[in-house]
Length: 219
Image (cartoon, rainbow, N blue to C red; front, side, top):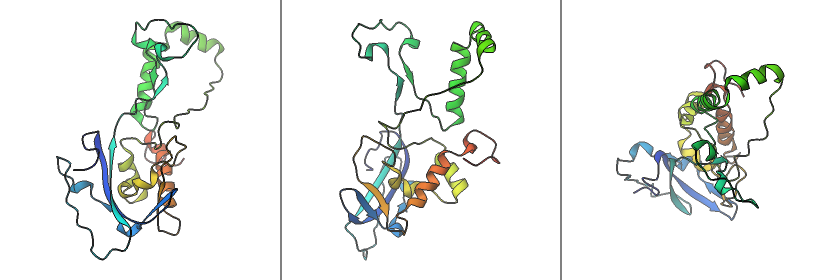
């Protein structure tokens, strides 16, 4: 059974041959990388046959799942450390707020709907019309507890725009953000250590295609 099975919707499963490993990097043979996602059955089982003439340390099996991070942008009042007791939570508005999927149209629309339904009443709209000239937003610091940005439609968009599947290269994307995790980074034995695949991933994440018509596909 795949490791982590039933922890979330399966995004991808792959295998790769480890050629070298240090405390900071683990080198995978690029030619050995194999996307086995479609071979996984409904119970999380998969049959794998590795070439007998491989030269390396070991073959590794990777499995990645889509799970809600439940990342709080604003903590609930009873979770905030303060010198005085917090007011009791009586409504869902007082229960903090969660970061939406910033890389999808659905996430953007969720935020728009919340503003229109709960924040932009007639008095607020009138005030904005009178004094509103500029909008400023502080940095969106989402990277300290999560180490990989993802959105459900990223695999399809990646394939459409980059011409190949991201599935077998997901190991290279893990921990590529500033993270509290100190795990070693996966690289490949390609001349650029696989950095071109990371660049393709980053380009796909910031595509205007997630929000705009297909002809607008630049960052």
